[in-house]
Length: 198
Image (cartoon, rainbow, N blue to C red; front, side, top):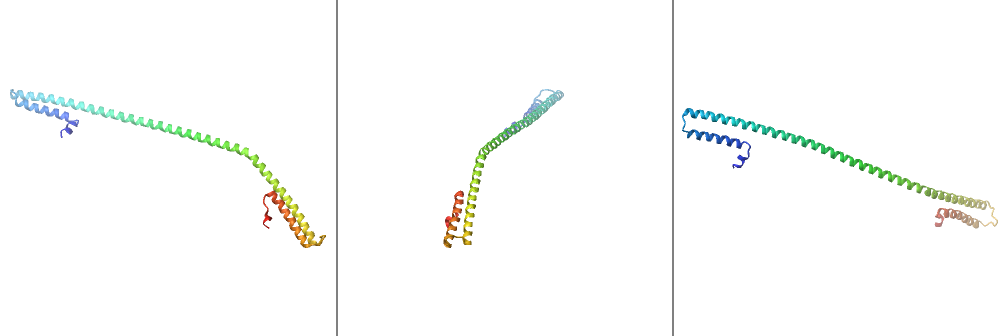
């Protein structure tokens, strides 16, 4: 109950005034002086107390001003320190981001260079394989064209009746064999034989 009273800043001043008033009243009641002397003494004491109260007020005002100034300085200092710290952290973060970006660019450049060198290594071999495949295909097509032309010439001769023995069934069999030979020759070059299913 009294704890809250003593914790407030004005309680010391209030207790001082109350004690002064109680002491003055008791002093007046028990004083063996005359009325004029008592009145003069009261006026003197009131003046003393009024002066002490004024001094106490000025001291309190100075303390409050000092606390306010100190608090304001601390808040200003804390704000500037916080700004500086935030700026430093921002710069550190920016530097780390730039460093990571540079490392990433270096890795990309290195990977591109590696891929380019691998491509340069593989390109001649791939070109050689394509050239060989083209030569094989051309050779197979030339052979197939020659065999097909021979087969067609043979069929045309047989159809015109230029056969030596006059056997038409044999002519058809020979024409089929010539065509199969042409296709087989082309398939060997290519790798599959479409007439095997026949």
